[in-house]
Length: 251
Image 1 (cartoon, rainbow, N blue to C red):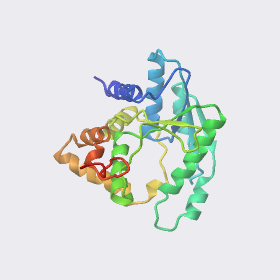
Image 2: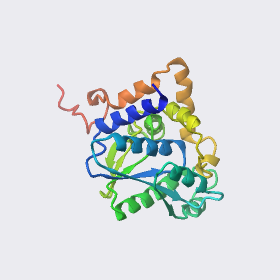
Image 3: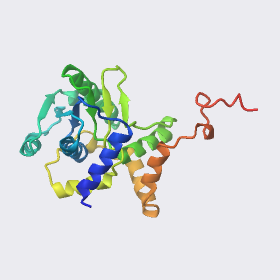
Image 4: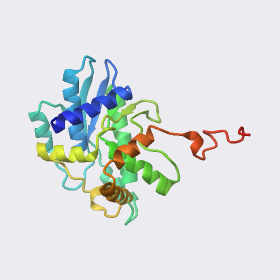
């Protein structure tokens, strides 16, 4: 089976298992110019053509005014494939570099600003779903980051309602390992837009967790699948959260 078909089938499984798309949905695909969201856009278009469920797709890219950012080649590549792309321009780069102390990670503030802009755009233009390009390994890394550094067990859900109640966010790549996306991106050889903000900072916590998982995979190649399964198999009685399990009632 070709790699593209394997990825498509995993996306279809995720869409089905978590009821991500319903008839009549208008889905805004938030693309960054990177491999994950670009492949997601391509796959959703392929699924849309085969699906009996009618839904719309539109790609939106946020130009955050990072120095050297140029989306012309990327936009031309999408256009050559027949995909619509809207570029939204907002200077979050200046805000992030001004507000974040030297040596600190930009990712937190950057992602909050980006999320707010995209959520507003979706609500203002009639999109009822926002598709993000987080893959299986992103979910696994996030749960470890929250355990190691934030003292909680939580990750990125496949589907959620935004805090303001205006948007439903979906993550169709929830079952897709990053390795598949890396290999397929090499086959496509498309013009990726690099991130000069987060990508310029070394030794970020996520990079450390990613490195830890890669080391563990050398001994157990199935560790990613096992950890994803654990997120679907929660045993509240085997943990310590008194809000989820009534220990007082046990006698």
